[in-house]
Length: 538
Image 1: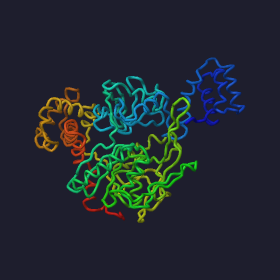
Image 2: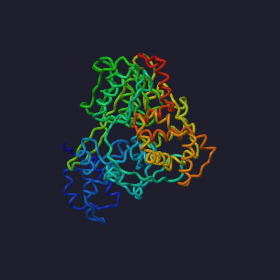
Image 3: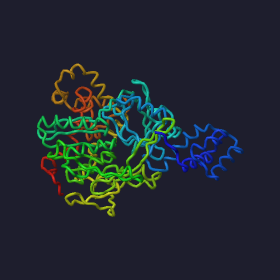
Image 4: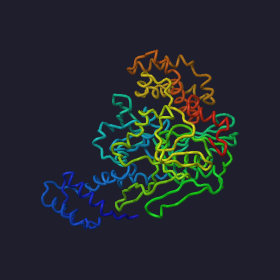
């Protein structure tokens, strides 16, 4: 679709060019008609620069430099992808691309890691959600043109090639370097699904892509065949995806005629209310939905639809707060702008988009502010906008203006986090040890039937801890046994889950991690007490 740039964009380009200290030659002036520039002041400025300024610059280069600056003044999620990056996406419709297994977001020229593909290249290397990338292969992030497209080009490469990411991690003073080996990532949007107990099926959804609804229904059907009567849907760390897929998935649990989401934009073509059609296959199951501060966009549509219809118990911590709907617009040179065109509203009428009016100074730090304010550890510390009060289908009070607030709050688990644990995790030693262990013992491990046998027959925990302490010592982190003993359970869980993933797959990884996961255990307890039975009233 060809898109005509409005005059205000052309004006912005001209003013940016003037302020940036570059000169536009006559070629640009002669081409301004395609932007609709007729304002005499703009033309006077362009003519002045053309006649008097010392340097010249390619109009195409000027445009590429200017567009990200223009878009940055809109909202934090509107993005620009140049023609090369747009072509990469179109050339890989099957979702198989050389990648490093991260989802990134850029706030105020800072590259943030939003979430990690479990057991993907970045996870193996030791990258964590919340990390800020400060260098890519030694190139300072400050020197990189701050668009997702430009960053994508630098991160992508041949399968098996390596790159070094230097990251700043909150609470840690040093810059951390990680070597990441690129690997072909297949967009499998369900990390895992398995039976938590004889009645409860667990499904971990990492993103809402075109194939997610089909994968989701297949997973739930298989779990039902294994005896699942209740379900736990884990959306923690899920940064979103396609809105329509989230609606289809919510539809599976709702009776006919219930609102799922309402869209409202400046143009009437975007205005619509979507309701359930009554054809969902799982309308009678009890349901818990897990969220955290990294659950965003489509995750919030799904959680909000079920919460506002009193259909699911939402467990965890307040979600991210992204209530904007985006469309991709292809420009004449095949580049793409992902533009916010509408806001979405949950069935109760709330918009959960957090404030971005002061995005350049506040938006990127909002999650950090939650931490400083104590919200991750105490429900009473959640900053609620009490001017935005709404009511669910059966009368429960919910709030708009900044994410989905869970029905059951679960604090971040800090048990076992010591300086020693932070040091070995930041150095990526837990992952490296686990993969070294796998390689040394692969023939024995692969003869085991499942992860349960592995847990029964693995060397005693004391031996693993001692071996790991020696491994870490060789890497320069000396053993401090007082702290090691405090972190014992966390270290063992991490190592065993990575080994299990390598040998037995993602379901084994989740099964081991979830045994000591406070949010999963809280949801499990609530489901077994039938607190998620429809309609939820408390």
